[in-house]
Image (cartoon, rainbow, N blue to C red; front, side):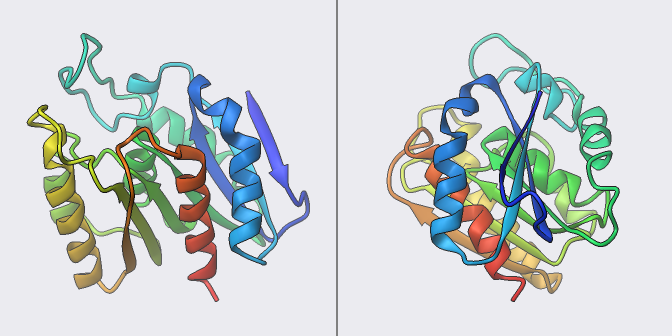
Length: 208
């Protein structure tokens, strides 16, 4: 399933992998983006079937619950790149939670995306910090955000998200990437549509 919002003929194309849980907030998100930037955009939401499989760059054991993480990100990226065939357009990739991690990972695989919008991205993902340290991102600008209480959890893996995200931002800046890290009030589940809207709007505004 592919859903589109915004200005159909816009120069700037925002692509977001989404799960079933994201669908009710997409109209609110598109409205939020338009309220935070005057740059015309088209938002393309690409629904994935299995969240933990389709957005994970490699396999990893469960961090919460019983469902492990798969290695479906390459196939998902291939699907998304098929939507980026017009070389005259400017493409951005972004998402929330594991989709935010996927978007940042994707920018290490291809230079198609001018910017990445990772809202409350799952940068606690096992091995990802080490991956970033040994590879070079291929986009110009990265927006990262977290909720102020996301790192205050009893889960030891997920509790590392604050420090890992801070270090990720520092690493990207050291590589001369325009990177910003913004803290939002609340936990991981507070205002995901508005946080994602803010992330995409910031990525757009950074291209001025």
